[in-house]
Length: 165
Image 1 (cartoon, one colour):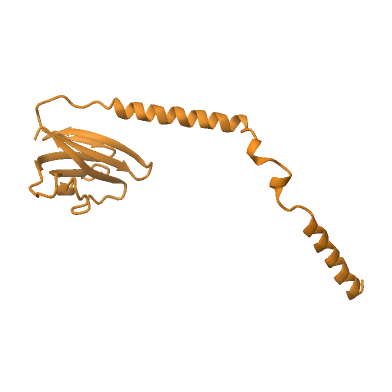
Image 2 (tube, rainbow, N blue to C red):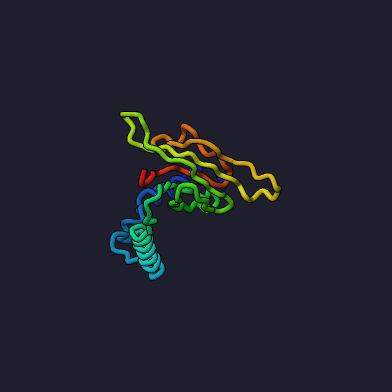
């Protein structure tokens, strides 16, 4: 093929592409396409799980007692699941491989802050040695959890409140 014929062939191809509609919306009306059966099932399943999660949150049982209760939110970083934990002061509770023992809970004395502070001792039970060392032993604050953070590679804990203090 000679260079002149090649140029004219490329020109003809470009002209034919220019005059053909490139936009698929002009050929298919995307607004009126009905969802497939699988998409409808996924939407229905998503709505059901959202409703079930909402109902579980509403029905979350509170401990009815006159003792002080420490409320924590726990996160498993591997599964990305959170759990609200209520622990009676002085009693141990497990979350995953953690053993949590709240020792004290008080209201914050700061005028601008309406939060609470709690003294927690947390052990990691995944270590098989006999010497269980606290992975956290100190005060934590509900208003600013980063002030004294609980640092663990798998779990996070946040103080959310205290009742009956």
